[in-house]
Image (cartoon, rainbow, N blue to C red; front, top):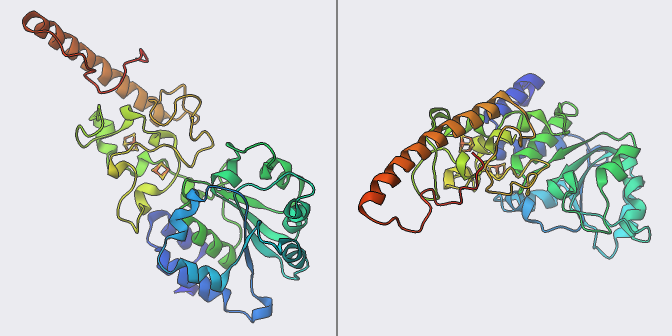
Length: 336
Ligand code: SF4
Ligand code: SF4
């Protein structure tokens, strides 16, 4: 099977979802163990400070704990022997793939801080796993922005796998790609295009509703597009609609929750819109026709609905007092 997978077909199959996580895990294990133990590609997963929530989708995958123990070196930066471990890693002959996950102290007396740059320099490539490592947006004082303070200062290639959490397929697929071929092709935010090239909307089950203007107006109202409830699907690039969560059972939008844009650098505040603020084309970090179209549709449909509501309200006012509640289930703050 492996020999038939050209680089092109690998990417195509990743994009269309036909390479499953169990298959990718098996393929990676096979490639990793193909060489003698001493010359195998080593994968080091260095864990800094972080909530850990972004990787729950990885840790909870059946069998992944034992898989990790067998094929990765997972090291906590809090480990008591981290200093000697880090020195040992910088002295390895074959360059390792280094996964950095969470925040790392900028204290020069911190043993990991001391060795992080050396570790990065001797790595084949660095993967920034999760939003903390990828974007550092919520970075507390006293911690490093890995990209600007370390990775931009060295030549080691790096890429990002953001998300809250990160899909396991992104990690195992990227590692497979690196072992079978080379570095994956990246987008302008240094994310592999095989996972982050399409917007959530493009593959959403409610895309037809989006285009027809069948918008859900308040939570639990009906099935339909969640754009008015603040869905960031038009400006979020990720493959959740294809891969889904909980063992491919469901995903955010399918469960009735708007996409919160968790794999984008603007997450979670999205320039003041927050998780439930409705996008307009000018707010969108990606100024696509799709978003412009979305805004136009939403504004048009909203105006039509407002007109309908106004007529309805006038006719009701003539017969009975209106209840003190929003017709839409949210505050109409004059955006439209
Ligand atoms: S706006 Fe959200 S719910 Fe609507 S089609 Fe896009 S991703 Fe799906
Ligand atoms: S659908 Fe949106 S919020 Fe949900 S996991 Fe995917 S990118 Fe994140």
